[in-house]
Image 1 (spheres, helix red, strand yellow):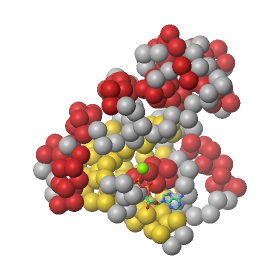
Image 2: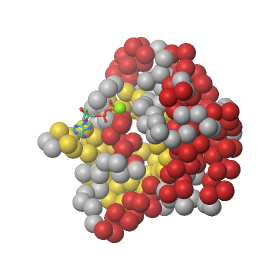
Image 3: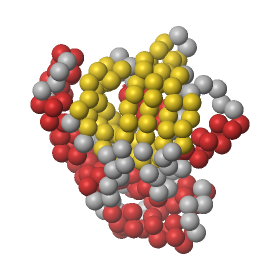
Image 4: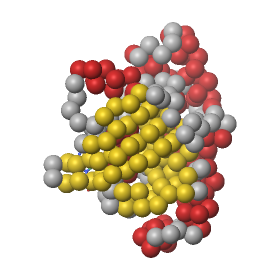
Length: 247
Ligand code: ADP
Ligand code: MG
């Protein structure tokens, strides 16, 4: 579903991603973890071309794009590729002046991902799935952080993506609210079989839900494997040190 091939990304003279290869298969959940500044967000942002790769290629759902400058053709392809990718950030970025339901349907309506009636029905089903059916008419300010993040997840899903990217979706939340968001993500993986790339340091979630974990270190994947191996018996001292600090 996703193929990251030889990805490099520099900001000016600073090279922050130094050759990342990563394949994510349909229905697979890959957890990405590693120290702050190791390039996790940059890699995720390259997958849907929020950042343009300096070098390398990204393939999503059969659409393959090279890094480098944007031509008109490439801009069209980026638009197509993005229809397959949903993203959830640390900050939920909901529109404060819209109801929860409008937040969920807005992008889908703009992109014409079905008739208005279909989209509204889908949004209601999704709000039900994330446990917020009764909040459709509320404004985001009336919701807790955990509820707002669940709305953000429903909003991304309303676009009917093939892959969901999560960038530290629970790090801005009070500890007692992380569980409800991780619960929704677990359901998404186990019941909806969503393909997911998740940057998180929630090792309990990783152990239970991830098919594979990838440890990022200084712009590279230092090691990857099933959670039992990566958490249980990491190969590299850097991985071990990081795990000791977060576990
Ligand atoms: P992580 O998500 O693992 O914490 P990031 O991918 O956010 O790491 O950042 C990796 C490095 O790239 C950091 O040193 C960060 O300061 C730098 N960086 C990220 N985005 C930009 C940008 N837009 N301009 C300049 N430097 C950036
Ligand atoms: Mg980050």
